[in-house]
Structures are given as C-alpha cells and as structure tokens.
Image (cartoon, rainbow, N blue to C red; front, side, top):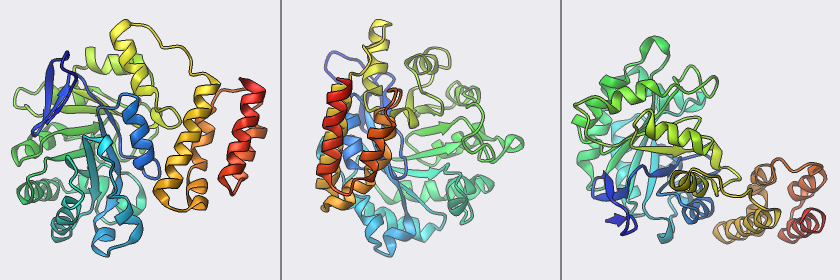
Length: 336
C-alpha cells in the first residue's frame, strides 16, 4: 500500500505500508482522537492517524463506547486502531474483533501512565513485566496479518530504563514499528521528554523497523530536531495538535522552506471549529452529544486571542449546535 506522493521517495515501511521520509503520526489520545478529529488532521498533512486507545475488556463485553471507537473513515487511511490490556486470551479475542474494522495497523498501548490502566497491569504497567510485554506482542503478531506496532515509554522509572533491550525483543517477535514516548511512567507528563534513549534505539545496528519519537514535539523546530539531530524515523504528534490540526501542515512547510506559515486567521479558526462540530454531530448521531463532546476543543482552537473568555463561555455553555454557531458568528464580527 502506497501512502506517499509520487514525487517523494518512499523510505519508511510499516509492514507493507509505505510512507514518505519522516512521517508525522497523530498520536492516540483519549477523548480527542476520534474520527472527525483524525480526518481533520489527515487533511492537514498527518501521514498516519491512530484511534483513541480501546480497552480489550470493553470490546469483549461489547460495551457500546468501546465499539464506537472502532469506527474509521476511508479517508483517514492509513489508520491504526490502538488497544490495551494485559490478558493474553483477551488480547487475542480483541484482535479478532478489531480485524472486522479492517484497520491498516493494530497498535498495542504499553505506555499509558494513568492509574486506572496501570493498576490492571496494562498500559505502562506492563513495563514492570517485560517478558509479558514480549509474549503478548509475539502472540498478537502471529494471530493476524495486520501489522502489529507498539507505543511505549522509556521504562517504569529512571532506575529501570531498558528500552534498548525492549525494542530488540519486540522487533524479534514480529513488532512492525515502535513509538517511544521520551518519559518514564513515574514522570507521567511532567518534566522534559528525553529523546536520547530513543536515538540509541534507532542507532542500534540490530534495529531495522521504524522507530518513532513522541513527547514534546510542539513546534516545527522540535520536529526538525527529532529528525536531524536525533535521527528518528518519524514523529508522533499528540497535544500540539489539539485545537491545531494545522500543526502537521506547519511542520511540513517548515521542513520544505525553513519558514513558518502565516498565523492561522480567526476566519480559518472559526471555519475549522464549525466543521469539527458538524462532523462530531454527524458521527455521534445526536446533536446534544456532539455539542457536549466538542466543548473541550474550543479553548485550544481560539488560544491566544485576547479578551476571548466571554465567547468561549458561550460556546461551552450552549446545549445546541445553533447556540455554538451563533457564538462563532459573534467571534467573526468581533475579531475578523
């Protein structure tokens, strides 16, 4: 499968998926990386997008919320579905459920630091049991023809960073690519991401699968540093894209020209926020659900605009799409 413009050299492969040099990946983010948001990021240059992480137990129980997260649009491809769990039988059954959505990639979350996930031995909790991490990855890779990838962290804490060994072992059992967040579980999201151990993985002569960096890629310069200084195969973008799906386009423009794109205009911000809400309502199937779940994005869409609080409050307090659209119109009248 080719996902690269003809005038670009294909250098990165995830299984049979062929990508351009230094692809930008949209990270799986809970309550953010749903189909509408992924589609918007894809339009703005994301090369690969991932779903929110999905509980293996939720899928097996046929929980509606978990099943809904399996929805993907054709226009998103290549798209990865990310799952988490720590029980081998559950994870294999989950693979069979996920296959029905026909994703291009199945990603295993071995990095979520949240207590409710870690306490079940899943997410970053599995960093305490590397043998189990390898066992799960091997069994899942053998259970499907879809490429299995892994997202993880440097280690449980500073004293237990074994990412070099972990990466080699995951590759040896069939993992097709690894995305590494440059923090330990103990750090959560505090402090500065450390990309040096990720570069050591990439520079290991035994490694031949793509190694993607994650954590603190929040400017075009940071993405360039990850590429040119640390030599990684691509960047996984998370929080920098929230309220700013243009980030992927901004990075690629900077790569090509060394210059920044013009600041996003208020007209474009309103148009993107409006479209996002429309897509959210269409996907959710109920106006009130789409309106409520899109509220979290408005602060970021209109970040940095002075004296904006009044309009943001109107957006987040409205229970109808029309109420939000009216607030958008007021913003255009005031700031455009």
